[in-house]
Image (cartoon, rainbow, N blue to C red):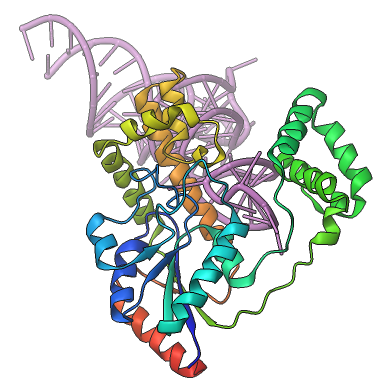
Length: 303
RNA sequence: GGUACCAUAGCUCAGUUGGUAGAGCAAUGGACUGAAAAUCCAUGUGUCCCUGGUUCGAUUCCAGGUGGUACCA
C-alpha cells in the first residue's frame, strides 16, 4: 500500500486548524505540524496553537515539541519530520501535514541541500563585522569567496549575503558548490491542499484574531519572554511588536496595530510563495466535503 | 433656523497665483534552499462632493445645492 502525505497549507488565519481536525478524523490519522513558531513550547497565544480540545482529539507532532533555547530550522524540520513519518507509516497509510511555514513545507516535500549548521560564534563574528565594516565589505568578501553565488544573490538582502559568507568560511568551499537545488525523491505520495479566502475576509479574520489574542493575555506571554527578545525564534509577529511596547518605544495601541499589519503582510508573503506551486489544489475552508473527496480521489489514482 | 469654516487616494491631509494632482500611513505585485512569522525588491491607487456661471481651459475663481464640523439661536 503506497503511503500518502496530505499537506494542508494556506496563509495565517485562513482556518487551517479547524479543517485539519476534521480531515485527520476522517482519515483516522495524526497531524504533523509544519509551523516554525508553534514548535516552541514557550509560545501559545501569539502563535495560535490549536485549542486544548483539538490537541486532545487528534495527536499532534511538532507542536510545543521544542524550546526557544533549542536550535531548530528547516533542516531539523526535514530530518525530524521524515523520521517521524517513517515511524507513522508503519501503522498509517496517510499522515496529515498542517502548517503555513513555506520553507518548512518545502523542505519536507522536496528536501534541501546538506549544509553544515553555522557555528554560533562564527555567525556572531560575521554579524559584528558587518556592523563595523559595513555591508559593502562583506559583499566584497563574498565576491572573493564565491563569485558564482555573488552574481546570483540579491546583494541588498544582507541576511543572505551574511549567510553565504558564513557557509563559505565554515566549509572552506564556495556556497554555490553546495547548492545543488535538486528535488529529493520521497517514498510517499504528496497531496497538497491549499486554503484561501477572499482577501478582505482574510484580513478581517486576522485583525479579529489579534484582538482576541490580546484578550487572552498575549501581552503577559510576551512579557515573560522579554528577556529572550534577541532570540531568532522570538523575532516573531505578535511578540516583536509587544517587545517594542515593553521597551517603551511605542504605545500599546500602536503595537497592536503593527501586529495586525505584520500578520497581514505575512499572509500575503505566504500566498506569494504558495501561488508558485502548481501542485496545490485550492479550496475555501468551508469546503470540507470537497477537500475530502479530492484527497480520496487523488489517493485512489495514485494507488 | 443664522453665521463661519471644511469637502482632493482606502485613511489623515498637502497642493495647483486657472493648464485634470502628491506625501505619510494603509494597500498591491514579486523574490526566496539551515535565522523563513525571517529577510529583500518593485508599484501606484483619483468623476479633486454635485449643478451651473466666468474662461480657450475650472479640481482651483464666482453662485446655488448637498454633506460635515464649530459657534450663535
